[in-house]
Amino acid sequence: MQKTVHAMLGITGLAAGLAVSGTAGAVATETYNADTDPSATDFEVDGYSALPFVAEGRIGGPGTHELDVGSNTAGDYDSADHEWGNGPFETFDLNWDGEDAQWKVGDDSTTYSDFDSLNDFNSLLIRTATPGAGTEVAFEDVTLNGSPVPGLSFSNTYDTDAADSDRLVKWMGMYDAGDLAQGFNLSGSVAMSWPEGEKPSQSNLAFQVKGANHANEVPAPATGALLLGGLLGLWKTGRRLKA
Image (cartoon, rainbow, N blue to C red; front, side, top):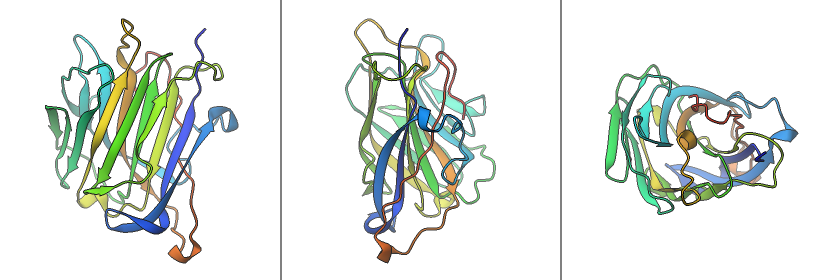
């Protein structure tokens, strides 16, 4: 039986220091094993509430798509095909102007406009899934509205020594990022890799950028506190990621 760990990687913006989309903040990250909180399976963790906004990159395969953006991944989205290379970084760009969301990876893109209300949109979440030994999703050089996002260069590599589970899932959360409902641009580079001759399919190897609201109050910068947060998802092997 293959083994993996469901993990939670949280990034919270706030205290004094680095700027993210015009908001001063420092960032801390930490990884958690699901065994420490088996019930943490949804978005109502650490103050986050999911909104109907998601952009996805998935390994896909013949007869399906690799990119989608929309209100959810269950059908309310627009999609595009994309040929993933095994290992090389590719640029990605998610642009939201308050009405339309354009999602682009490499030279392929798709746009969605039929969103529900996105009030109190102040957070972005990135989640990744790797299904087996030798698989990885990695991000680097991530920026929000042109400003580097501290901590948002990371990788999710499947761990064969972890506890019995389905897939390695890591989350990164960023809150107090400003009024994102009015528009934002998130860009950077992303890579997916897998063992030669063992390419996964569908959403088994995948990542998502989700919109969210974080209701926690931000402490005064004078405290200099580093806040930890995040989310945990438990996904079944072979099942599509749910928005």
